[in-house]
Image 1 (spheres, rainbow, N blue to C red):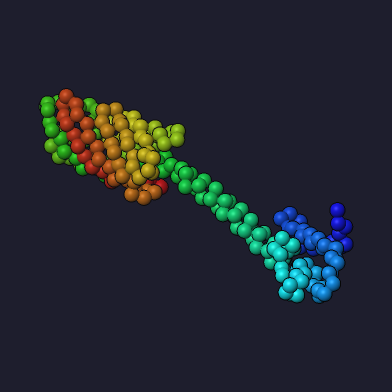
Image 2: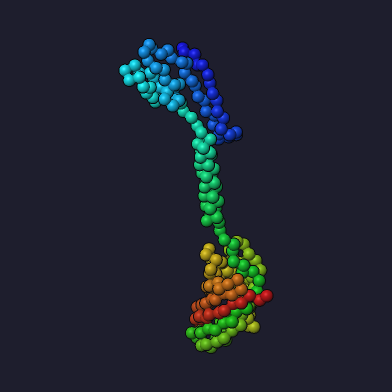
Length: 218
């Protein structure tokens, strides 16, 4: 085995992701008679000596691999950019799938109502808030005191009576759906303090439809 005459070590930076480059130098070769010596392998003009041309030619197998500081910087920048991109991707995915806060229905709401009835019998429905007439206007108050997730328990009150009501806030946080003791309410959330709704029920005494504007009582 040929002895290695020298070894040069170049260290680019310190810490993780940095590289150390080794360059091994070949021992000097004897120059045949009548030929001129070439420079060291890897140097300008260096390479094998050819008697017929008298000109050194480079051989790729003897070219030294050199890692420059610029190469190391580029490699480190690529790793850093990749890490940052993955971090933002994971964070963005979490944000996209996060569920929004449930609309706050708790508290008291004043509802101005106007409705119409089909009078089936001459006897009023004991659970009907409006007067036993074909058209009526009514002031209602909804009060919600219990919540579990998107579900609410409360009461619906008029000057005539009070009944229980349950409501659900839709997954889109834009609509509510409610049921009292004999009818149903569907509403559109128009802001944190306003809801537009419509109501209907059918009983042996009457068929009712109405529309209301709710405003939060502060």
